[in-house]
Length: 229
Image (cartoon, rainbow, N blue to C red; front, top):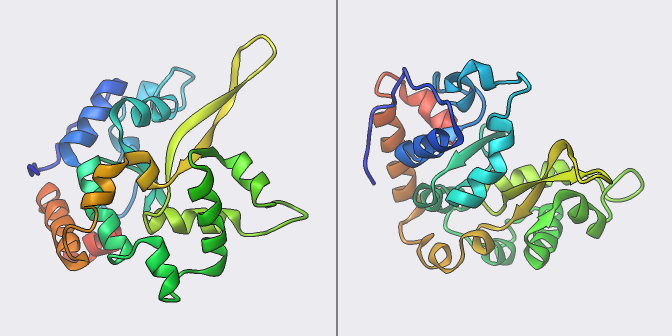
C-alpha cells in the first residue's frame, strides 16, 4: 500500500478521475466530514454537483461495478468509497476480528441486526425494497430497517453493491437509484474471505490511522480517531 499526501487542489471532472482518486488514496467519503477537504463533495467540478448534468450521483453504480469499490455508510454514518485492499483493513478493525456467525455465537450481535443480516446473506445481492419485503419491514410490519442496515454497514458486514434505476413503460430511466445491498463476502468473494482477518484488529486500526495521518499530516489525532470511529 502506497502513501501519498492528499492533493488539496484536486478537482474531479469525470467518473474515471473519481475512481483514480479512490484507488490512489484508498478512501474517499462522498460528503463533507470531520476531516476537512476529504470528500467528493469538496473536490468535484462544481458544474457536476446538483446541476442536471450527469455527475457523481449517477456515477456511483458504475464505479462500484467497473472498479470493484466498496461503497456504503462507513464513516460517521456517511457514505464513502473504499478501495478493496483498504476495505479489508477497515472490515477487520470494525468487526473486531469477528465474522457474523462468531459475533452471534458470543452474544454480541444485535437481535434485529442479526435478523436482517440473515436475510441479506441468504439473498445477496438484493435491492433494498425487496429486502424490506422479504423481512416484512414497513408501516404495518417490522421497524428499524434503516437503523440496522446502517449499523451493518458501519460494522462492515454489509455494503451497497449497486444502484438500480427504475424505468417507465417507454424504457426511460427515472428517479433516484435504488440501493442494492450485499455482504462483503458475496461482493468480493474468496480473496476477501481468506485475507480479511490477516492482521489483528489493533494492527488494522493502526494501519488505517497511519495512512489517514499521512494523507492529512496537518490533522490532529482526535479528528482522525473520530473519523475512523
